[in-house]
Amino acid sequence: MNTFAFDSVRFLESVTGAPGIYRMLDAKGEILYVGKARNLKKRLASYFRTDEANPKTRAMRQQIADIHVTVTHTETEALLLENNLIKQHRPRYNIVLRDDKTYPYIRLDDGQAFPRLTLYRGRRKEQGRYFGPYPSAHSARETVNLLQKLFQLRQCNDAFFRNRSRPCLQYQIKRCSAPCVGLISEEDYGSDVENAALFLQGKTGEVMEAMVKRMEQASGEREYELAGRYRDQIASLRRTAQHQSIEAYTGDYDVVAAASRAGVACVTVMFMRAGRQLGNQVFYPRVSGGETTSELLGAFLPQYYLGRETPPDIILAEPVEDVEMIVAGLGAQAGHPISLRAEVRGERRRLQDMARINAEQSLALRLAMDAGMRRRFEALQEAFELEQMPGRLECFDISHTMGEGTVASCVVFDTEGARKSDYRRFNIEGVAGGDDYGAMRQALTRRYTRLKKGEGLVPDVLLIDGGKGQLHEAEKVLEELQVEGVLVASVAKGPTRKPGLEQVFLSGRDAPLILPQDSPALHLIQQIRDEAHRFAITGHRQRRAKARNTSPLEEVPGLGPKRRQALLKHFGGLQGVTRAGVEDLANVPGISVELAQRIYGLFHAEE
Image 1 (cartoon, one colour):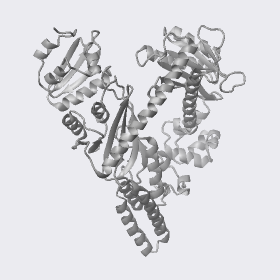
Image 2: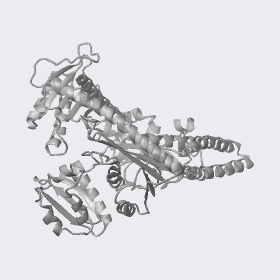
Image 3: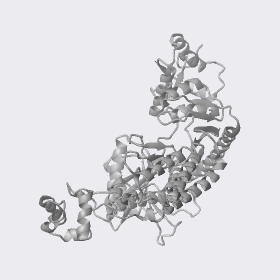
Image 4: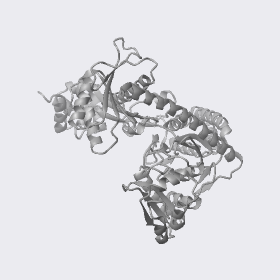
């Protein structure tokens, strides 16, 4: 007698043995699990064995109401389709990787005479050579700074580069050779570019050999200043090579290890490129519990590597199932053969052990942090007298300088900590400078209008940095948008404005709530409030700097960079341009009467 709600016997009689994917659905039609198989019949039959010991599988099959099968031509197609469906539906019983960010590269723009060296994110559509990926922007910036010291390549944008009349600070501190004003020839600059590329490829020896030849040639031609520059570069390269000899690993590959305990999973990836260790990245996939580390790695690999650059070799801490299918899928996407290995020796074995240790230590730290964060959420539930522990908090803050460049921030926390992928900033427009109520109203309206449209998750608690006035504005917005089930609270600093004396105003209560200074609930409120403030002021500073670095002359149609520069030189700056008449402006070479009238009208629109 079949004890399952789903008639597995009849289903298995008709299912095919071809490769494909399967979706297990519950009685509501929601997807419980998505899987792939080279033989659908064998794989699906394994779920319904009466001796199944895995508690996760037993719990899942009790909820199965239907199974949808999609047959594919190849195992590779099954892998790709499974990956897309997992990312789209995020099924409850799948291991789901929460990582949508793009990783930084270092880019050399070869499309011009003096290529620019930059840190780059996003799809590599622009012309140029790319090196990486790097596990973090910090590690990429460190490499860019090193390259600037060694080869003095420019980082400035093209508009800045084209409009220089004298070297900038980067030249003075020996971080750029000033190609903008012709202090280095195109040929010599090109040699520095090629040496930088060789260095990024791990060919430091070839770089030093080429620079020694150039130094000897310059010395023979009595160009002693140039020879001295090469000598200093060679000395810096030797010091760098000695420092990196500790990390003398060869090739491009990643090392991947996993750890799991107490319903929390951790995967760490170590990046090796051109013989240099670029660092590591740690991930915490969502799991349902009971997965082995081998299963974690098998689920992680396609979700992580499909859609991004994959090195030719991936070293695993332990073997995984369906390795041939994963190799075929990753290789088809990458356009070159992929190797997945767990049996390695020598330097790669040492890195493999290091990756395992990193995964275990990161997991232990995560468990300790999660326990502390959960205690804070439980304390907040008690302090706010909520029936259930809140699972998601949002906090808003406003930042501006005397009403200029107003920016609102929204940060999100859950029981795992900050959810930075859900953070949002709002540039406030059409509100009088200094009107914090109006700015908060606009930010909340924009945010919760989107949430009502299904573009995000509605929080359990909404925190506002401010007092009763901000609380009432938030209540009005939620009432107008018919957002229900959200507790609104505002956090105001006490009379002395010292940390620990905050007053918390709750929706529906007259008296403020004052929590003890050692309260975990207060610590959570302070943490999310301070994070909202940091995020807001960072956005405000960026907006203010952008506004101050933009010239009003850029708004004039037909007035390009060269003509703007000619105007500023002719009148000694922007103030002189604003005082000039139409005839004076038209006397500048390249400025027609019609263009002069437009420039004059920009500064005298009300006259």
